[in-house]
Image (cartoon, rainbow, N blue to C red; front, side):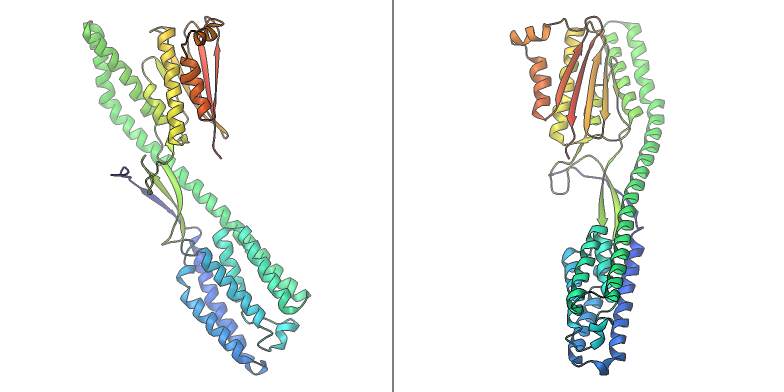
Length: 404
């Protein structure tokens, strides 16, 4: 198979959906209202056939496009553009139909149906889209009236302010939905981690601890098996204690018009391309009896290629600890997820590096630090800083800026 199978848990958020239902009803009612105004003043139109043709198009369009106004998923840009064009056309056709009040300050052919077209832009794209649509309606009114008037400015400003306010509310609601969905994911992951921790503590960890104790008591090859069991116990405890929060993505439910949160297992995206990788999963494997791993509680997502190079640099730093600090040295890995960068610090309690030793090693052709660590970080746009004090251990800080 091209990608791994994913298990999805969808959290539906429909705070926005009632607004779409209200818009749907508004469009139908305002269409009936505009037609009623025309019928009541039919005799004053010089060319009523223009208005009849327009209202036939307006009624057909409004009823035929009800599904497009049922949610954000179906409300596409082409629909919004066509919808606004019909509103603008009705405004410009008002004087052509021969209704004198359309020029002197009365309502246009589409009347308040025009506001529904602008509100659709606000619900779909937020306050910026609403401002653009309101501006276009305002320009059409100025062209139709042949100038500015107090009533026209009042009506245009009313539509503009209302649509911008609704667009801003929609943006805030969407951000709140995403925050709530993320909080629910973390809560669910925490409960699952606690359940797994109880089960593992009652079975696997106790068995590994027993193997370590018996192996050390027996000595010989059994002691080596005990040592390995102890390392695996520490690594497993690290994974259980840190936990791995599932990756997630936000999208729009085309059926319900709501923002949803989809929680994915690690794998590939639907188009086959590898998705973001949680750096914690790559670094957790380094934890052991003499390596302590500290991580943030939330996923540290990076491009897979960048995450692999960074994890390889950490592995090279740990190889140097085992090679130069001795078998009894302890190492610590600290993963930090800052707003602008990801930082991994590898520190040990070994004897440190004598001054000038790194330059001497590079001159002798031993390029472990230069290539395996600094070279890898340079290739992915990061930096590697090494601080070592004789007798006080060595610290390697790996910093990778986040992609915008």
